[in-house]
Image 1: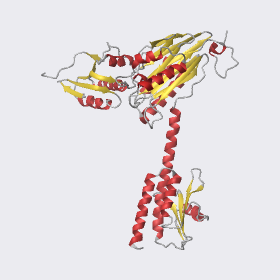
Image 2: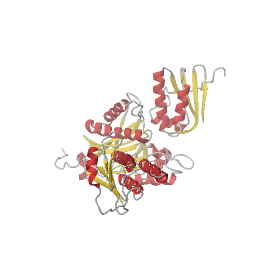
Image 3: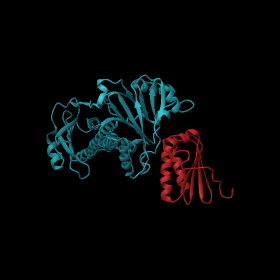
Image 4: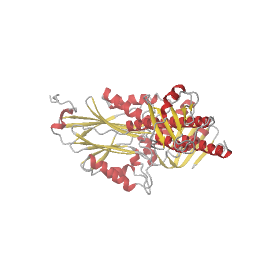
Length: 399
Length: 108
């Protein structure tokens, strides 16, 4: 090889390395790699790889539509791991170190009339090695982002259920541009004897906070469904948090809603969480008994208070992202929240009022997550009686 | 915004400004640097303007460390807003976590 061509080849390899490092999606990565090879080194280049289900698939060719099949030897090369060389075609395995090949790179000469020589095999092998790294990285990346997306979706607040006799509305805003999921969560689910509605806040951000959010939400849900008692459920979550090697603190405000004929009550428990608001006829009242975070101590002394809910009454649960919202001069605070809520006409209105107030008040970018869930007691009617469960149309609740 | 004074058996870490997600790491480092060989470690919150739950997390974590390390951890109360935060987290005003007088440096 002339020194000039040698230099070209070094450049080619350097460029191929950059592609391998900066890859994102398999097809794009491989297409770029092949563009580097054609027409400098071959007239046609094809990359085949073994898909996760074990099939040999053509990932890319250059030019995009070569009009002919050149990759006939790919399967054999992948099986044997040995390169093939003829004057017209080179096929090299895509292999990283001593691992079994994950595909094959085929290079062919056609219209240019050029031919391959023995000396080209080394370069082709090196290209194959780099293509293998690119493909493997792209695969790992795709796998990782799929895991991340799946996990994020499992953490996003659920669609609110229909609770007989009540109406729910919610607001969820995660701080930060790239964080769909933060440390706040809410949930609403049926339990023996009623429904539980919960809002929680996990200290911190990022992967650790996401893991804790997931643990908290699902532990509380499971314990709530099994035990049907908010304090017992909180104690279970407390125990689970205390088993973690690192201090894991979660604040929670939860209510257990019970509706029987005309009477509806809410048992409300706070754990390290600011009070909820009970709205009745244009007035708002902070409710709850202050108690430690979950995860802090073996015993928290959490206490439930029972609130009688008249038709039109509301309970508004929120996380501290609401009261800690930064304004021009000060934080939003509890008093502003109480005033914002005092004449809310319903659950959806209460949530909308908070959102509007925060948007108007906020100064600079939002730093904390915000979650709000409002529960409105509907006027009693056939649908409100007896705590009838969804999908349980035959049970007669009246006695 | 952070000031550590050491006495013979005690250390006082005073904080000014905000204790939140962005600053609590620095406060924590100061406390951990100060707790070496003391019988009382004091966190002075009198000059804190704002604190969020990160501050509470810090306090609970220091409580734990103090218990394991065999020294006392004391918080000097902050403004009404900060005490409200403590109250919400189950530390009412009379809680043994709080101490009154700041500890002056030895010989001072």
